[in-house]
Image (cartoon, rainbow, N blue to C red; front, side, top):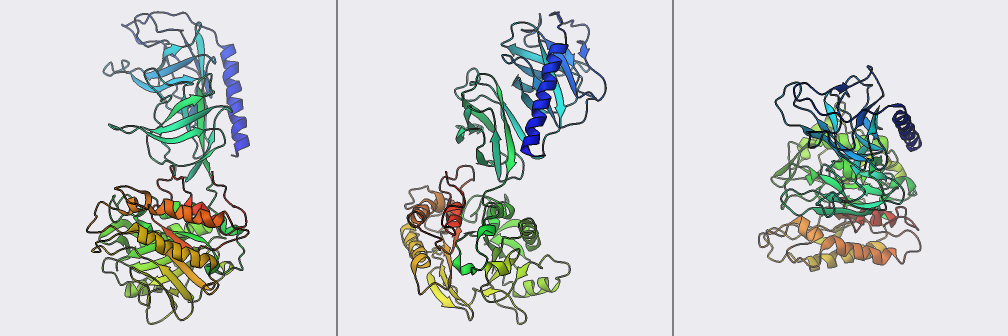
Length: 554
């Protein structure tokens, strides 16, 4: 269902609620009989809409309850409830556990609902309205079942912070979908912040000045809440609609006659370490899965494996096999056939890969290797759209073609250029070996600057493929200096690699009069945590391929 249809559905549901409010009468505020269960307000089977009458304050003898129990069971199928009531009113919904078992404590189903609030659907005979505010007398609450668009999430917020709270205006919600971005839908004129609820710690400000139509990165699986609303008179609902990443199809806009070495391509170092299996420390270099990286615009991935074809970084394993990596890449290319993926393959943790990969590719009929481009020369983009270009960092098997050779003359922990028999390659990979006592980000940054400058301006290097790693390794003499801290700061590291690179790229982008070349630029933690990326390195590298920005940068 498209956005326009979704808006029409919500308007239709609101109209149903409004008509029901006019049609249903009011009951008097009667005391609760402790000897008998409360009356159950019900309806016919498969109802789309039902209603319940609430008093303007809790019933006599009750601290919170302001209505009889009402039923949501046996209603029409759906995923969510839309709640309607007078605009000035807000209320809670609780579950009565005294009946029938008489052995529990009532619990909240939803809190601070107002007109137009949305919650997940739940079937029970024992809900009731509680803690009403803003009612001048008895009022009707109408609840309507509907099926949400796939992936939609909702958060109901008060128009001001909760009592006793400085910022919080909603209860916690979680965005669980496997989407890289969401579009915000809320009433025009309202702005708010989104905070992260951190147990036993100071809550974190995630996003500020959020408003209708804004695209945000997905702060996946975190406890979030709405905070500091402005411009709202009544409670309101925020809808999080899955949105397409602006970087998902960027290669579709690039001239396909260009060779890959003519492009600016964002990449990731040790790309498989974004899984939860790899904990924080020296081995973790990414925060996100291969799928998310590709959706975010990454087009060079660095796959390191042992001889069992398990993805690892040194002794730390990602919980992935090569087949799963290929499935994710193939799935992405099936959906985005004008893109291409450069895949560097390297042995790790004792793996040589030569025999393992030779055997694996021999089983072409049962393994997902059909999208590989394994010629030795660097192709044009058109030639490899929808394909995976193999970059070989392992010893070549005796027979067959095994991609672009990066293995024989790779400058270990250094920078340099070489000719591999078919192509000119320039590699910047000064990462500082573990035992090196001087892991110096200033030295590293100068190597990165030199590589970027050559890719950008050097006539004699115009046919070179540039691979520039902006990453640094943990060291024995500074074990607290992890790849994360080199990338984004901490423990006094100066310069910090990703913000420093951002400044370097800005200098070239601001003076461009057409497409410029940075080559393939390979990053650790390319977008920080996603939601807090304020450098936009991937977007800047992509935009270098165009005279004007393809992706607007806030």
